[in-house]
Length: 218
Image 1 (cartoon, rainbow, N blue to C red):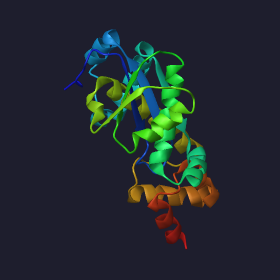
Image 2: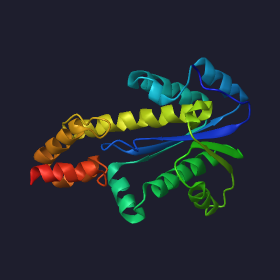
Image 3: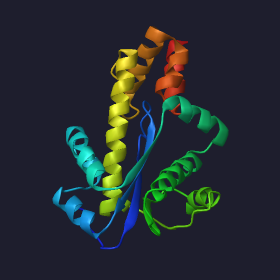
């Protein structure tokens, strides 16, 4: 079923890669108005978790064509540096959400944004206010039921998939999604081929997966 909609202009924000050991953390923001709302509904835009990877990669360029948007991709190396400094995933997410929103507000004027509930919304608002931005931010559970957030979830996932594939090609090993035993095996392969240091370039090191992989090598 297509996502529910209201006719008010808004920005939807969502992220991808948060639970994936390999690959970047990607945050996308998408501006939707009454016209693009109808177009997104016709395209059967819905939560990216309910759509196959192949279809996501097909839909993303169309969404980008019709909706003003902004994508912030934090590659593993940058992610690890930020996590070292911030030491808190919700704060890091808030920083990324604020960046994506800020970039989109350079292109469109909009007073309302909707994001998934992940923590303290003041973290996002404070980051925005530091740049002199004010916006009403609604955080709600299952926000992907809103078309704008669903569109953002597709753009974020598509960018994540493209970058994960690029990283896989660079290390010559298929880097799986998620954080399973298959992921641990791939991490060991990366270390065998390129040394432990290379993990910093492809993985989110604060995951428990890192300890499991390194313990297995000891």
